[in-house]
Image 1 (spheres, rainbow, N blue to C red):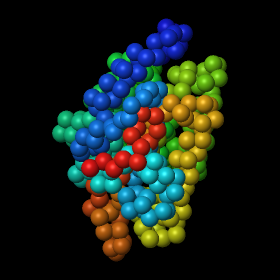
Image 2: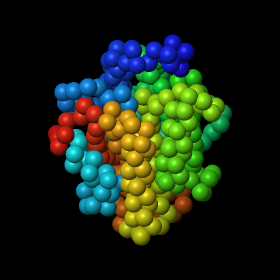
Image 3: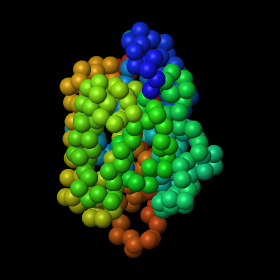
Amino acid sequence: MSTFWIQNRRRVTRNIHRGFFLALSLVWINLGGVIPLPTAAGAQAEHIILVVLEGITSSTIQSGATPHLAKLAQEGAVSWSAQSITPPLTVSAMASLLTGLPVKKHRVTADWEQYDFARSFMRSPTVFDYMDLACGADTGVFLMDERLYQLVRPEIYVDSQVCGYTKPQCTPETVSVYIQDFLKKVTSGKGYGFRLFGVPNLLVTHFPTAARIGQKFGWDSPKYSAAVTSIDNAIDQIMKNYQEIGVLDRTMFIVTGLNSGPLNPLSKKVKKGEAVELDATIPWIAWGTNIKGHHAIA
């Protein structure tokens, strides 16, 4: 972030936001198909939080298992039948979400499901790049899967943290605490080694825990239900974090998924290494500033 932007942020906010949302409109897709944001009249949001789920179906949210997510869906705009890419593999789907491109364009294929250091970073530009190019907007990224690290190139306008498979202590609650600590430090004016010096214009967080637990212990197991509850509580805590620093009323939430778990969750357990057909139908929820309330997206 430039010194000019730090010193003149409030004075140029209005023009910045126009460019910010123009950049988002160019790449903001719901993976397989475009879903335009159902905006309402009023001031533009200064901040966007993108929550990316795995292994949570629309019916799970609608069933009452995730009261905080259900509240966002009820108060905001929602589609229960949005579509991911096909097949909705984790890394490829995340690449499409961040770039707005199909797999054949960004070239993050099924091979990327296995981490390979030799591949380096994805070359296609992401929403982070477009936002910086359009208006100098910054991004914070919190991932729970080391494989996704290669989708986020190190840039001065992106702060990223990974707390994934190699750290068993990492949970959705842990990530929400990381975000709370990050927001506290970047708004302190002291830096603390972070690249950003304020609340990021875009914050991306990824919660794959439900998918991992479902695959290991079963999609109807108590541990899966506990994982879903943990994610729901973490999302609520992120909202509280933004409320504590006084920006929730200027923030837009977007919640979507990469996949909803297996197409047949009650089928017999598959053997290790055996492919599972994943469900590409995912939820898509928008809530907050400038979002049309109580709106079902057709």
